[in-house]
Length: 68
Image 1 (tube, rainbow, N blue to C red):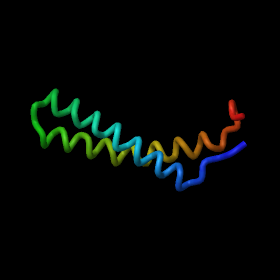
Image 2: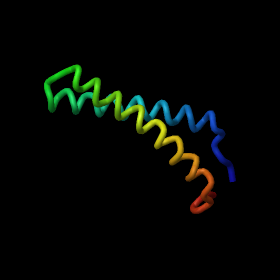
Image 3: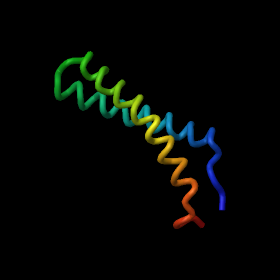
């Protein structure tokens, strides 16, 4: 059984967050028609979810269920 190192979890967190935040930004911009609101929404969302995702990954890394 192998486990991700913390720095790998951080790298995965950051690359996913960029992808997800760009998606949020585009959707918010399209729905509001306002670039600044799109940036504001995606910035708040990114900061909150970076921390949530990191801890989610670390918790799952400690669960042995369905690991080979």
